Image (cartoon, rainbow, N blue to C red; front, side):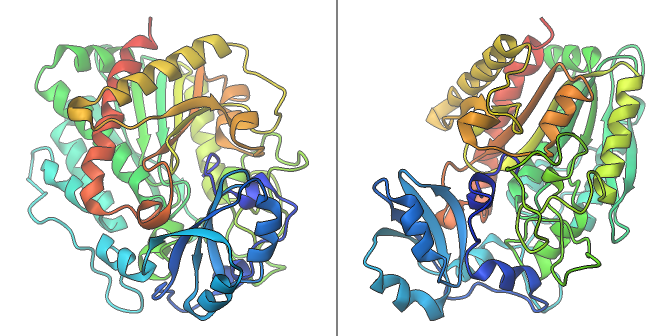
Amino acid sequence: MNCEKMKLLALLPYLAPLASAAVISNANQPITYDGYKVFRVLTHGQGEEIERQLQSLKAVQYNLNTQTNIEIAVAPEDLKKFEQMELDFQLLDEDLGVSIRAEGGFYPGGEMRIASTPNWRRPGALPDKNWFQSYHSFDDHLKWLDDVQAAFSSNSELINVGKSSEGRPLKGIHLWGQGGKGSKPAVLWHGTVHAREWISTMTVEYLTWNLVNGHLNKDKTITDIIDKNDFYIIPVVNPDGFVYTQTTNRLWRKNRLKHPSSSCVGTDMNRNWPYQWNVTGGSSTSPCDETFRGLEPGNTVEIQALVAHSRELVAGKGIKKYIDWHSFSQLILLPYGYDCKKRVENYERQIALAQGTAKAIKATARGLGSTFTPGETCPDLYKAVGGSTDYMQDMSKAEISWCIELHPSGGGASGFVLPPSKIMSSVTEIWNGMMWLLPNMNK
């Protein structure tokens, strides 16, 4: 996530990664995470010193807050060593491998089979809402887009903005209302930039489903929203990484681009946008690191395709609203990431809209709404360069450019590995936020 609270390498880019980072980056065999335990280490203001201790472990770090806690998944062979450190910790997940399998979408080394809810396809009609009861394969996500477009054929078209480095499509859908396609400013949504953030895929699709369903049912508010905006929605912009999380490594973050000078694979696509790419700090120059920025600005084929698409929108009616959807930590983040002292020119408008969106999310019925915190990527979170929201703000001149970090607020058993039972509550609260934001941003 650009926004992702992953946080160690983004927040402290010059500290060495945990010992397991290179191992996991280079792994050719499926990683089950069986026996890994997830802990929250309370740091009591000594986070940097404790982080140095943890570097000796085979582990995966979920997040870092040096003033309060570090969440970390420790391999079974290093559990005794971890316990001997005598740190103040809480156990969050007894067995990460069990939690991953319970999620229903990861079957390493065997036939790919997502534990999907049956009968979601309805020929000629909008897919059934039970689609959002489980996670799905990449191929099924493509079929889902086909079915949504077919159900809304007079006001939509499929878009394919390019291909991944392994040849998979960057496929999405374009929705429009009165005035015809391309007649209104763009609302552009990107999901699954970071491969392991499956809830971002489901969220973007849930928003799409509700827009289409509302228009088909002549909902006045939704019809008005679509009449005033052209929606360009790409649920999975990192398809290679996404597929890899379903076959080999559930916690994979980057794309799958191979590098000529390294055996390590993948570039962090949200450090690769060709704007402020080489600012010191906020990304890594090592291909083995989670926040590797790439060998050149915009050198990944996925980012090249997304840049070209954004330029097409700018050349048309421009970009009204951009959201890069990520998980996790429940944040609504404005630019900038590359400069902690710079503030967007229309800050007061953007932060007011972010606060209103957060309030609407919190007000979700039956007390189900979560607390989302508005702020700026830097200094409120961390320095991050080569990011999408900075690019869209300054290069694409988007009026509003955000990264939204989704449910949950912390890691453990429901960080990146969010159970299917949590999908509906997570996406519903975001829909409530969008139902406040979309009408109000046009005022």
